[in-house]
Length: 106
Image 1 (cartoon, rainbow, N blue to C red):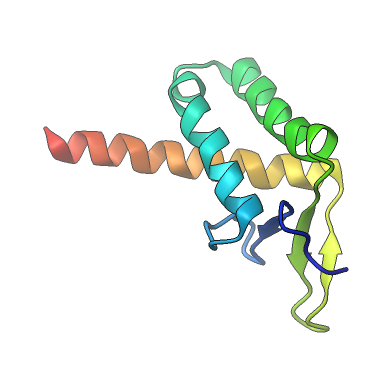
Image 2: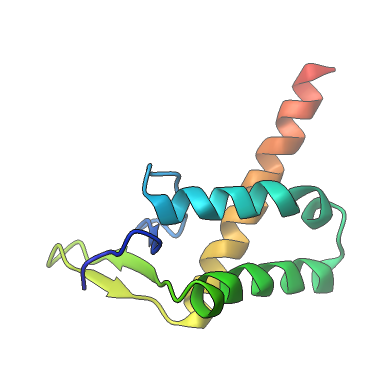
């Protein structure tokens, strides 16, 4: 599988980095828009936001979440459940960074 411009490239360590790839940049914008709501949501709210982002990428944009297979060098498409985990981990990590940045500014 070759990445299309709006696909999201996921890292082998379970994260989604901002790689300069258009799909990853689009995902970052989605994160930025929803971060405040995500940080202030309960677990059900966080699940819903994560699900909305995954659906937006897969269903609305007809894009995919891809991960490079380190043994073959080829990209493989991740299913919706795995994409959910990647997005949730990235949102949670970004949320922690946001909190750290705000705390250090005080």
